[in-house]
Amino acid sequence: MAKKPKTEPAVPTKGELEVLKILWKNGPSSVRMVHDILSASVKDVRYTSTLKTMQVMTERGMLQRDETRMTHVYYPLLEEEKTMGSILHRFIDSVYDGSISNLLITFMNNNKSSAEELKKVKELLKKLNKDK
Image (tube, rainbow, N blue to C red):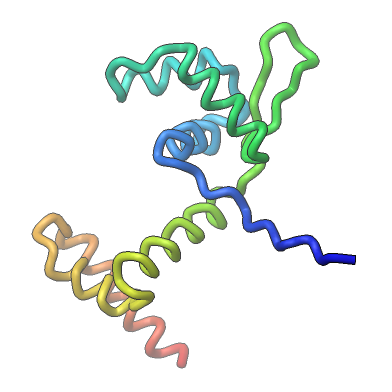
């Protein structure tokens, strides 16, 4: 009997991630609510596109749809912290060859990094160093 291949959790596309962020922040929501929030930040988003995206996400196991009410409500099945961690690991692997130090060097040399962000990173590094 052949082994079933391990299925990795679905990795959301950029558009799917935007939907997940809305659901994580606002809780279970209708397509209309998600669409209205998306429309406020992204131009030219059609309701049918939002609906189709959320239907595909349901098929891919990212969302669950509650059909007990007239208006269907969608729930995220992916945990925010795990999903963001997975995306970050893939990013570090593909862009920085798995090197977190190279990522941090780029971050520290980035002109967009605020003094507050840099301070937080330095404090975190100090704390990590003390814990070892």
